[in-house]
Length: 501
Image (cartoon, rainbow, N blue to C red; front, side):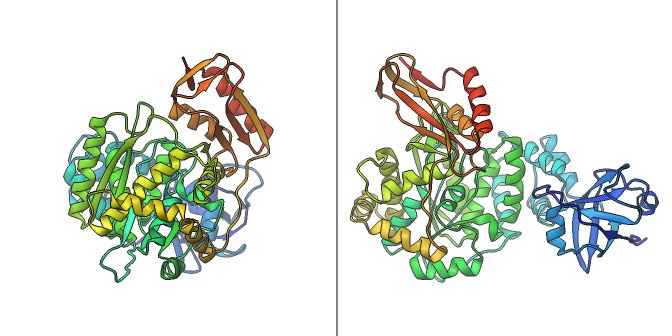
C-alpha cells in the first residue's frame, strides 16, 4: 500500500536545533492520530515539492501551535525554503534496512562493502536519526574495525560524496591526526608548499573534540566557507587554499558523523582513518603526509599505537590510490603558545612573519612537515625538502603566498584575544616537567573555544622551562565573565595541569 500524505499549514516559530531537522505537531491533530505517529519518529516532510527527513517533536498543549498548524526547526525551514502559510505534507519513512548491518556490528560481526555503502548512503540521505548515528559510531569505535572494513568504509565515504579533479599528475596534501593543542601547522605548510609551486588544495575540518580545528583557526583570518567553484579559482590563482571541507560536501557522510562524534567526544581509529583519507581523495590529492603526534596525554599515547596507525594509513592509502608518508612526532606537550582559534592564528602569523618572538616549536614542526611534503614531490629521501621549505619561510615568500591566498579567498582579518582574562601563576619554583594536553585543552573549551573564536588559553611556559613562585604559567581568555568563571571552577578542582618539580 502506498503511504498516504496529509497536510497542515506552516507557522514560523524560529526554533534553533542546529543541524537537526525537526518538525513540530500538536498531539491532538488529525494527522498525528490517523498516522499513528509518536514523538521522535523519523518522518518524510514535503513543502512545495522539496522533501527532507525530520524528527517529530510533539506539542501536547500550549499556545505555540493551533489546530491545523505545524512548524519546523530553523535548519529544516531553511532546507525546504519554507514560508509561513505554506502547506506541509507528511508520510511515514520506509524502514531503514541498513540498520540491520549496524545491529550486527554491535555484536561484533564484520561489515561488507555493500553493508558500509548502504549505511553511508542512508546517512547522506539523512535517514539516520542522531540515536542511530550514535549507534553506528559506537559499534565501530575502539578496535572494532578490521583492515578490510576500514578500506570499505573509506571507499564508501568517497563514493557517496563529490570529488575534485585538477588535471595534474601530482596534487599534495597533509594531515595531522590531532590531539595536540595548538598544533596549527596547516596554514604555514600550505603557504610554503604553494610558494614552492606545488598544488595543495587543503580542505580541513572544524573541531571535533578539541578547542580548535584548522578551519576554525583560519576562519579568524579569512573566509573558509568556499564553494567548489571558488576553491578551483583560488587554486588556479595561488596553488593552495585552506577551506572548510564541510561546506562543499566532498565527504558528506563523514561531516554528519563528525557532528555526532563531537557530541559523544569520540574519535575512533577506523573512522578517523577513513575520514582523513576519503577527504584527501575527494579533494583530488595524490600524495599525502600524515603527522601522528605521540604522547602520554595526546590522542595517540604510545609508539606501538602510532606504528599501528601508520600501517593502516599506508595500507588503506594504497588501496584507494594514495601515496602516503607518515611522520611520528613528539606529542608530549602543546605546540606553540595559543590554544583556541584566534590564539593559534596569532601564533601562525608570528611564524609566517618571521617575528623574533614567534613560537619556535611551531616553526620547526611546520618546516618538518612542509619538508616531508616537498620530499614527496621531488622523490627525495635525504631531507632536501626541509632545506627548500626553510628558505621559502625565512625569505618571506611563505607569508606573501599566505596573504595572496587570503585575498583570493575573500580578504584578511587580524585575529585578537578575547576581552576577559585570568592569569594562572606558579605557586612553587622549579622546572616544568609536564603539561597535560587534555586538561589544558579542556580549560580552553570551557572558556568558550572554539565557538568563541578569541577564547582559549595562552601558554607562557613549555616543558623544561625554569620558573619561580609567582611566574606566569598561562592566561585564560573568554568573551564573557560568566564563561571565564565557569572555566575557573574546573581549574579549582584540577591541580596537575602543569607539573613543576
